[in-house]
Image (tube, rainbow, N blue to C red; front, side, top):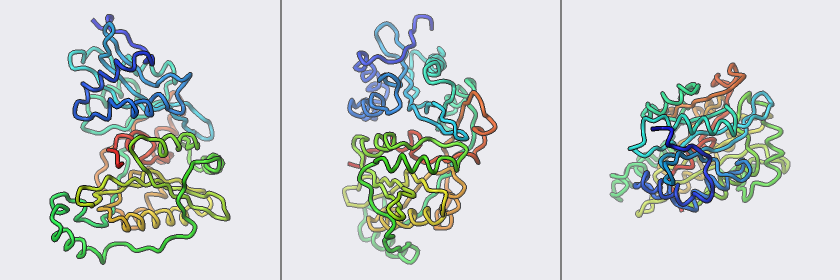
Amino acid sequence: MSDEIIIEQLKLSDKDKVLSFLQKAYDDNPRMSDERFWDWHYKEAPYAKDGKPPVWVAKAGEQVVAQIGTIPVVVNVEGERREAIWVLDMIVAPEFRRRGLVKRMVKAAEEVFGTFGLVINTAEQASSTKLLQSLGYVIIINVPRFHKLLFPANDIREIANLSILRRTVNRAFAPFRPRFKKNENVRAVEKFDASFDEFWTQVAAQWACSIERSAKYLEWQYARQPGKKFDILGYYEGGKLRGFAVLFFRKARADGTIPKAAITDICYHPENPGEIIDALLQESLRIAVERGAGGLVTDALDALVEARLKHFGFWRVKNPLQFMVKSDGQQDLTNNPKNWHLTRGDSDISIFESPNL
C-alpha cells in the first residue's frame, strides 16, 4: 500500500493542497494553514535551496496526506560550517498512519540537506521520539528552562481577572521584584545590519557547536515573522556590537495584563562575557518589570548563561524540551551537550508561540 504514496519535496504549485491539508490537520490552530505565515516559514526561509520550500509531502494521487516541515540552518562545528535542518511539524492524516511515511519524508529531506539533523521534542511526543531514534537521532539533553516571577498575579489568569486581588498580590510581591536603572551600553536595535555578521565571525569560535546567527537569518526570524513583534537589545562598547538579546512579550489580556515574557535569544562576545550577559539580563528584567509582565522565562543550553540566570534569581523549572541530534560525523562533539550554545530561538520554539500583535 505504501508504494501508492509518492514522497517528494513540495512544489509551489501544490501549495494550496498542503494548506488545505494543514487546515484539516490543525483545525484548532488556523495559523498553521495561514498563507502568510506559511510563506514566511518555508518559502522565505533564508537557507532554503534553489528557492524550494524545505517541506516534504506524501501524496496519494493529487491529495497531500502527510508533511514534514524543516528549517534549514548552518551549524558551526569546531569552526566548520555544516548544513543542517531542524525537523519539525511532522503530521500524517489519521487514515495514512503506520505506513512509514514520516521515515520516508525525513530520508528524502536528508538527500537534499545531508544527514545533520536537529530536533526539539517533548517526552509527550513519545512515538515521534522513537521514530527519530530509529533514524539515528540521539537525545542529547533536556534543554534547561529558567523562570523568574515579576508580577505573579499577572501570570495566573484566575487572579489576573480579579483586579483588587491582583493588585494586592502584586503589591505584596514588590520587595522581591528586581529594580535596575537603564544600562547606557544597551540600546534598542532597529535592524540586523552588517554589524551582526561581523559580530558573529568574532564570537562563533567560543562554542564547539552553535547555530549560525547571520544577519539575514536573524532578520527573517525576528523582524519579518508575521503577527509578532520582538524587542531587540544590543550591547555596545565603543560603538561596536558586543552582544544582543531578543525579547518576546505575550499579547496582553483584555484587562491589560501581560502573563509572561521570554528571552528568546542571547549571544555575547568572548571578551568580558559575564559583564555583557549581566547587562543584557538586567535590561531585559528592567523592561519586563516596566511593562508588568507576570514573569520572564527562557530556555538556554550554555553554561555561562545558565550561571548568570541563576545569579539573577531565575529558577530552573520544568525542562520538557528534548534536544535531539543526528550527525554523520564528529559525534564526540555534537552529542556532548556541554559543547552547545542553544537558545529558545534556535529552533521552532518561538515560531509556534502565539502572535502578540
